[in-house]
Image (cartoon, rainbow, N blue to C red):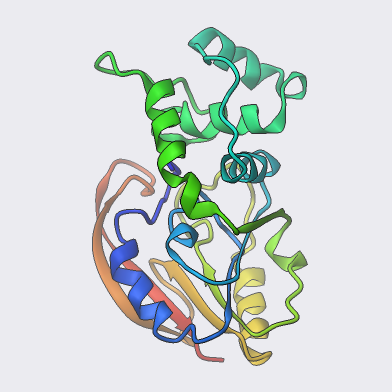
Length: 227
């Protein structure tokens, strides 16, 4: 699914690194985003995000839902202005899948006569079966309670890049990762840089639009928390 900062194109490089240590641990994603990583994992999978519209959309896709009407630019703009008048899954579909660059209601996606609505329908149909069995919940990463040993994959807002419209406390996040690691969970993080107690275990060259200015070649890194 389209999502800003998606790991769809690099999942084949970073997933094998993490899965070799998964064992019988459950898979946890505190920042599930477009579900482009979690859909490729087997076993117990829990995906969290603080955006209620995103979580509603992912649950609905998993359960067989499709938009009941075609969303035009006029309807898109009405949803953007009047979110409370629409079901949360409709808001999520329009906000993420029909926005330029997958920025949540940044602006209506247009270009070269493409039909982004039908492209998005085909996209959710392709991923539907891969979401079967995934448990999705809306909450902040600090609210996640884990009773079983878990492999936690974090893809948070990158420091110094697009903020997703929220203020993200990176120092709080680092401390949370360390706490999870001390409890015996395996914690991986995708970022460009991390504190010294996070060990880089994989580098992937990748073209991204998360930089503050324009798309550029960056090196995506996968870190393991060693606290």
